[in-house]
Structure formats: structure tokens, C-alpha cells
Image 1 (cartoon, rainbow, N blue to C red):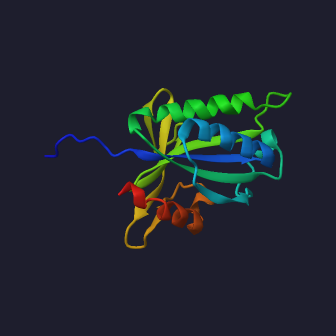
Image 2: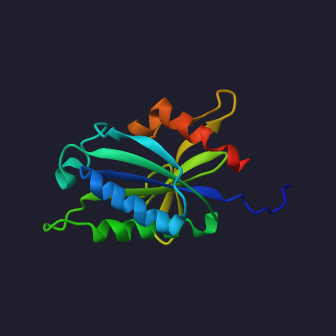
Length: 172
């Protein structure tokens, strides 16, 4: 039998998707005011892995991954999704469409979790209408975060897993 334990906190993570580079920079600044320093930025990349956002947000989308140094207690994780949702609502165009998509999550020594309001078979409800999507798991023998069968295509990029792994050392 195992004894109850309090899990270690994780790092706050956000993925920003927009065709407006200036807006990505503005939202990065806003998030930094709330979550502290953002020393880990993954090189922005053209998001051509899906057409899901094109109807609402248009073409020419760029994605920026941000990892913050502030630890975040897992019990407070649903608030990350609420904050991201409110920011998305703040930045809408005249038609009411989002001009930026903000996906929050958190990184632990064991895994990388994205947060969503959408349920699916592999997602676990964690409260306040928020589901945790186990996106990547840490594989010690290859020293990287590895994808699972349902992982979104852009997170399957080995460079993303390696970047997360290089920033996991402080979690140990």
C-alpha cells in the first residue's frame, strides 16, 4: 500500500498561436506579469500541422512555446485554462473570432500536460470544466519527452521533446 503524498509542482507552460507576431509578443508580456520570468522560448515555427484554426483565425499562423520558471501547484492548474480563455476573449476581431489561441499546460519531471475544455477518451477531468491531456511522457533512457498515440502532430516533433527535457533539470 502507498501512503498519500503531495505531488511536486510543475512549470507553467503556454503555447501561443496567431498570425500576428506583435500580438504574440504582447500576450507573452501579459503572461510574464502573472507567471514570472519566461527564460525558455522555443523557436517560433510555422503552424502547418492542421487546418483546424484556419477558418476562425486565417492562414499564416505561427506558434510560440513559452515555459515559465514559476512552479505551479497542481491543485491550481484549472486556473491556467481560465486565464488563457479570458485572454483569448479579450483579443477577438470585429466578427468575434479569436486572433490568438492560447493553450496552457504544465511540465513535470514525469510528463507534459496540456489543458483543455474539450473531453476525449484519453483526457482526465480535473475540475472547473477543465480536462488534462497527457501529451508527452518523459523517457529516461532516451532523455526526452516522447509522444503518445494521441499527441498533436506539432508536439511529436523530437525538437519539442528535447527542448522540454533540457528545461526539466530544475524539477528534479
